[in-house]
Length: 324
Image (cartoon, rainbow, N blue to C red; front, side):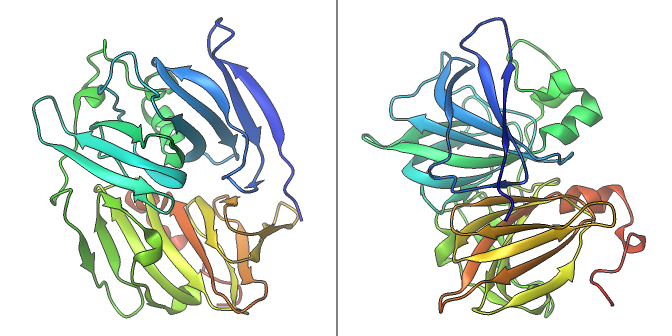
């Protein structure tokens, strides 16, 4: 089993209070208890840890917002990179709105909730009194850094007039409504919306390609970050396969393992349980297996599939599985 990681400190400015903690590796155990470190971001009181996994389009970070955490400029946080947010623990609400004077949407969320702020919409986190919100965020900042420059992709600066910073995406549905579409016999139903209060309550349907049940997630008309939930029955092993996109697996429940290897790298085996995060690089073989027990294993996969399918013809890359 390989779960070791390296801790790196990166100073963002000359201010000693702005030291960023980065954990480098491919497998991170139990994000509910993983260390996070105090940092002041845009006057926002929170704790945060980033993960350097070597992936080049999407990256994860873990943040914890305490009750009463506030920004110096309340209610004016937005960013022009996409984000997919999963609540690891705690409870509270998140508020979203497109622009000043537009309708505000407020959603309760807690462990098991997912949300994607539409591109460049304002949003704020509000933990319940006596609680906090700890969340995992997958963001496309590395991709944006390559497309438009690292400095401009780091965050939202209210003083600049960059056109990308001023563009707020319209979404093709009411944020308070949910649409579930059936896409065909080979793919499970897809959930379309902005927010899912509880992944555990979403109805799953057969997904033979993944070896169990599943549902797709398309949140906030994302064009770079895709996601889905898969449930593996006890004793299931999904045959080795590889993807033309990067992905992260967050384990929702159950226990199992993932093997990862390529023609150029030795095999790594990660034993996982609820709360673990695993990075799968592009074009690497991998296999997921349910270890033992009577309960199924369920995981959330977040990936860069949408942008890869827009940027290239994926059909020529490789066959989907060993031997076929």
